Length: 163
Image 1 (cartoon, rainbow, N blue to C red):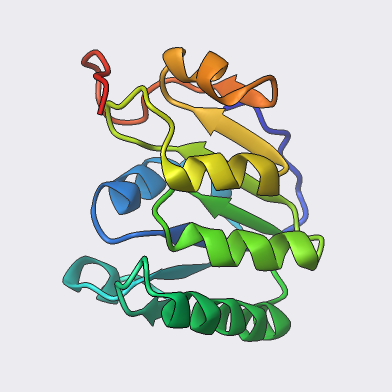
Image 2 (image 1 turned 30 degrees about the vertical axis):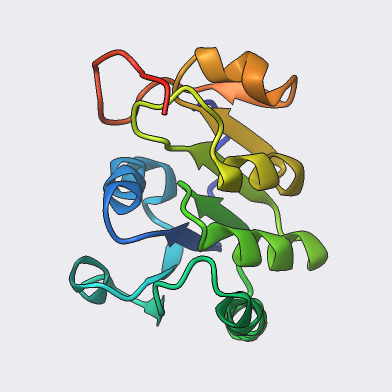
């Protein structure tokens, strides 16, 4: 992923779920090393061990939890003042990316659909919300559109499949 690095330190909000998306976020650690980072994740055994984490219920399709997550993200942004939001997917990203967009906080999304070459629902929304949008499989470039950039697989080296 080609991103310019800066010597100034800033706060980065990392948004991911508790399983594969978390693993992929951890694969990107070199990108945000040296910056202050905080997480916004689903509550799970794997995410409770993260430093500086806001844990939310894993209810991705609950309209009430979506609204609560909008408010949680807004409150968190007010205190943490991130300079960047980075997400590797999962539905938890949508309310955070929406708040980032409304507050003009730059955001980067990496479509981490494991080995799937069909766009995810979250990816379809994030495509329009994020400043930078990356995919792991070249087959997704045409499925998303001209703003998508190919980054390659973060974890898997096998071929993608349709979901």
